[in-house]
Image (cartoon, rainbow, N blue to C red; front, side, top):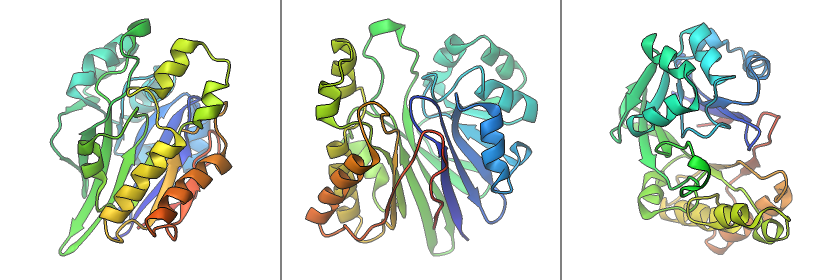
Length: 283
C-alpha cells in the first residue's frame, strides 16, 4: 500500500501537511495561519475535502501550528478530531477558550508517548526540544515529531516528521532511523541570522537548543539518519525555512554537502515553501 506526504505550507506564516493512504486514511499535521480557504483549495486540488480528513495531529501549541482562527473552525465545522499530546492540553486551552469548547464537543484527543492507531496507520510521537525557555510566557505545550507508519505483512513504510526543534536529541534521531522519507526543519543560515538585525534575545533563542535547526544542523542530521538507515531513506523534505534568514539554495547546498560526505547525495531533496505546496512524496 502506498502512502503520500505533501506539505501545503511551512514557516512562521503557518503550517499544514497532508498524509494520505490508498485506502482513504487522510490526516493533517498542523493546520494554522495559512487560512481556511487556502487549505481547502490546496486539498481540493488533490481531490481531498476537509470532510475526508480523519484527524489533525498537532506538533506543538505555537500559533503558527495551532490557532483559533484556522485550526478550531476546521475541526469544529468538519467534526475533525484534534490530536494533542496530553502535556500540551493546558497550553491548548491557553491558546484560546475556543479549544475548551472543542474539547466539550469531544473533538480533542490526547495522546501520550506511546504509538496510537489512526485508520490503517500507526502514529509514533517522539519528543523534540522547542520553546522559548521562559520568555514571553510561551505557549508551546510538549513539542513532538511523528513517525507515521504502515505495516502490511512483511512490508513496513514510514515517514519521519520533525519540525521546530532547537537540536536533534539522540532519542529523536533514533525515532527517525529507517524511515522511507524524512521531513525535517531546515530553518536558518547562521550567518544570516546573526546579521539579521533582529533583537538579540530572539537571535539567541533561534540559535539555541530550544529554537530552530540551522541548515548545517539539518544537514548533519539528515546525513547521519540516511547513513545509519542503510539505504532506506528515499526522499528528504526540508521544512520551516525562515523567509528572512534563509533561502532554498542555502538550505539545499548545506544539506547536499552533508549528504555527500557520507555518500548519500543521491537522495532527492525538496524544499517546502510558505504558501506553495511541496512536491508529493510517495512511498
